[in-house]
Image 1 (cartoon, one colour):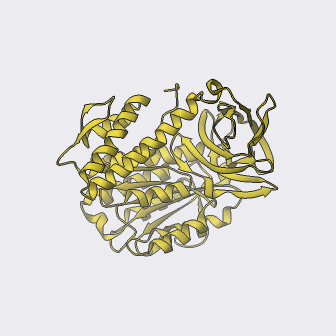
Image 2: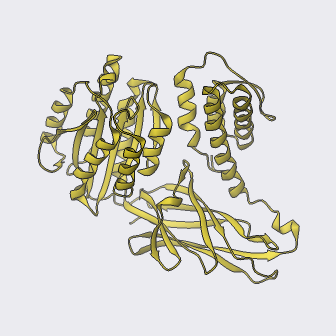
Image 3: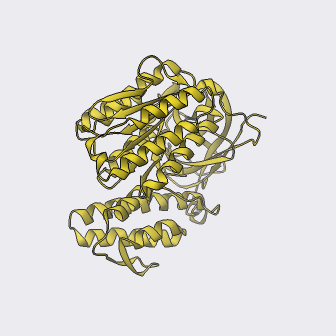
Length: 427
């Protein structure tokens, strides 16, 4: 049995007279317990390990990175093409040392793990160079599934932001990638930006002993993918335009600038690869040309899920205009829920920035707002992380005080996980 997709659209179709904007949540659900994963010889994996000088302190960091890389290698299915890259201010392919990616087997896994055992920490950090090298290695595997794991403990010190931006623009859409930061000397915003570009996840490693399990899980997820390179295709009628498209669950990611034209008034937005028993939400906002009040419905956007030229599913965003304010002011629960979670993530990030800058009033107001939104949305995981940074006096009103002596790890964990969201009414 192959993978099957369902596309659902949630929104309030009634707009007030003269209104020109419609918000909708598009839920895409993949199912198919018997779906076959992508054939091993069509999967390519590159593991990039930061081996800059800072990985020596404490020594447990580099030891954990080596153990995790070995765990990822052991998780590769036979036949998957792979390579390991050591990243400093350059990128050194430590396995294989020459030629194309190697096919996973007992022999190549053993040789790769021996190469990983020899990794030494010395040098700087240039993530753009690491990604460019991964892209070169993966370029021979066009048409298959290409995935990168990137681990770092520091900031991108040996490249300018403009240089990193240029590389991200170059590699966007060429492979997917998951990023992890170990220790507390890396920059959350920087790694989040890389992960969002690569349509992957970002997280902090607070316990080096847990890194191997995380690498094993990321590799396992990549091995289980059944369909690669799936996109949302949006068509809008004359006079309408897409304002934004953002992934809203399981994490926040803005896809608006990733649009690729696919025909007249049509654009494709990449969603990455999919496996069975998976569901994601997308927040679509469309600006429309207001029509007269009446019963006639207008198509604001046609949503299709496509893999290449194959249409996997679809839905419609239909609207009508009314003078009945009871209809036009209805709040769709899915739209409201995800709008609230995006607002909470923004409040957390702005509150932490204000806290770093010593702006106590702004930090207290923003983080208090985040506490209130987390309470209202039932986001208990985020509420627990917020409680490590602020003392919560009254969650419903968002009354908080900034804590003193907050650790860097607690602050970075809250920042990193602020974009992880929860489905409305679905746990």
